[in-house]
Image (tube, rainbow, N blue to C red; front, side, top):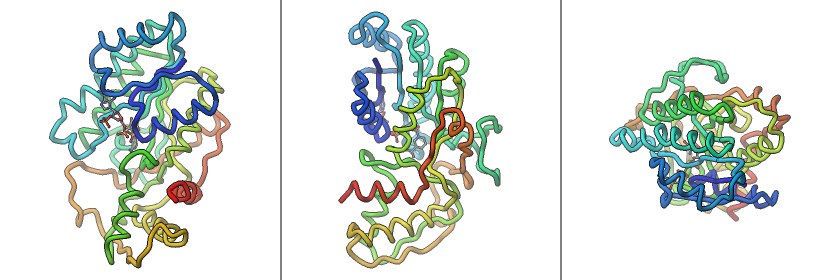
Length: 290
Ligand SMILES: NC(=O)c1ccc[n+]([C@@H]2O[C@H](COP(=O)([O-])OP(=O)(O)OC[C@H]3O[C@@H](n4cnc5c(N)ncnc54)[C@H](OP(=O)(O)O)[C@@H]3O)[C@@H](O)[C@H]2O)c1
């Protein structure tokens, strides 16, 4: 059985759909089970999973409000870092393995080639620092872990860049989008399928993995394609010109890495995964919205 933590979030809801598709039994929890409280974690497991039944913990809960975290570092630290001590302690006690998600924000973005898992980290934001601390807590406590760093996530159940672009493109005549941050988006459905693949293969090659869709684009490139595809299938009903700009024109509280491409060779080889290209996945997502 699986315990899916943060089950109503953007990624978790797609993992839940995949677990259902494969008839894998799971129980979800959200804020009502406070993972920052060790006793609450233990009580939840004891009350919901018969002895020996808990095989996997999939943790999707996180403090994901990147700018808000700059003003609320204590809460971000509790959820993104300290809670992992509780989860790993319980996983060890009940014999479960952990799948956890981290972020490209653990890097400073100064690279010019896609980041591999062993590259030096150097987070530049509270979110990045607390997520890195979460990774380190897991690595120090629970050998049976798969930590997946991902980036630019979007999906049906949560506010994200694509949904925001679609809304603004239907409201405005023109839109400025930053063209000096490079990466690759991740469709939550693709990542959820990768998670199921890891669970099936479960070859005990534990550790940190990178996952995003294939490609190398800026947010501006992404928004141009959202506009092109959105217009073609009727999700965008008016003309809107998309204009490139620099990050300095859009000051934000938290620093964003200017380069956050993730090298996916390790996850592809270890689990024989094929990773869809970003524009194919965008097309699948937009069709879901029709
Ligand atoms: N979104 C991205 O672009 C992105 C990029 C890279 C990595 N990631 C990582 O990917 C993972 C999934 O992200 P996501 O965007 O799917 O997250 P999300 O939609 O923000 O979902 C996080 C979930 O955690 C829940 N939660 C908050 N506090 C909790 C608590 N104390 N106990 C239990 N649940 C709690 C949230 O509930 P409420 O909604 O009620 O607060 C929410 O349902 C996270 O680890 C994130 O750091 C995301």
